[in-house]
Length: 194
Image (tube, rainbow, N blue to C red; front, top):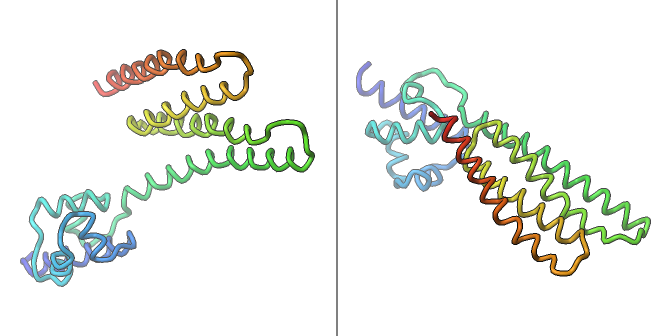
């Protein structure tokens, strides 16, 4: 393959994947910290990005460096991740929708109950769903975020549910539990990656 052919192939792939991600040249340039003039030059085959830049582009698009040079278009691996998150957020949103329906029913029937609590109760359940998905998919940082959200929203739910004096102690009791769970997650992740 001569240099012109390689430049044309790279240009075609940059255009193809940029459009697949619904990005303008300026958007792609901003995300990669390059000027839109550089992106435009590469797409017109007037220059070839360095190997490091090609690798950065390939990583951004979720493809391999070979795919960046190939004339065969491959499905981006990022789409799989986006589908996963869509499924996880869908299941978590079901809990919020059910809380909204229950809130509406309780409001219509004028039952003597603080119905807005249902939305608070839905938060730990939703974060539990998201936490389970992130643990199954082995996303360490995201599982840490959802575990944190689950523990503290569960404490908040308990706080608004019970009517005892000094109920702020719930949050104080949860602090060591929280650190213990985070430490356990850390130990599990260390064993998993050895």
